[in-house]
Image 1 (tube, rainbow, N blue to C red):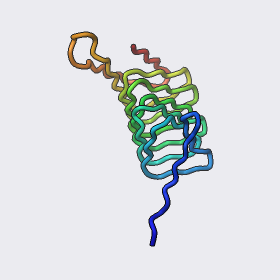
Image 2 (image 1 turned 180 degrees about the horizontal axis):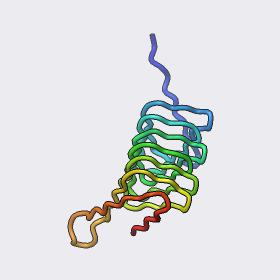
Image 3 (image 1 turned 180 degrees about the vertical axis):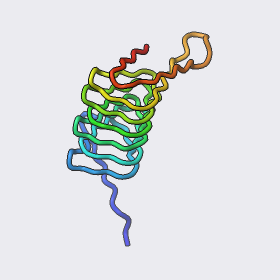
Image 4 (image 1 turned 90 degrees about the horizontal axis):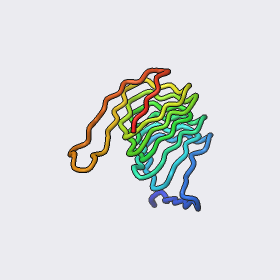
Length: 142
């Protein structure tokens, strides 16, 4: 009995797309930007790249990415190195740990937000700032 074949797809623009009719249950590890138009359940690891959840995308996962942009819906814990964007019409239920967040008017979030500031000069360790957001609340952090 032979092992299952490994398929590797190289995208010329360095972006991968999970199409609208695709359902993935398990772990995704990506070394390129990823757009989810379908459904994902599990974990997504891509700490150096951007994750975009399309308006029709549905995610139930723990996420570790450089940037996370939510246009559809996500449920889970997100760690973003740079920033999380919750766009108009998007839904986020879970916890966010990131250096920054943008919540557009009409974006929904339920959960905890933990913003961390990078150390400035010789000031020492990161200074976390806990923020609790509710629908209609605008959070601006630099």
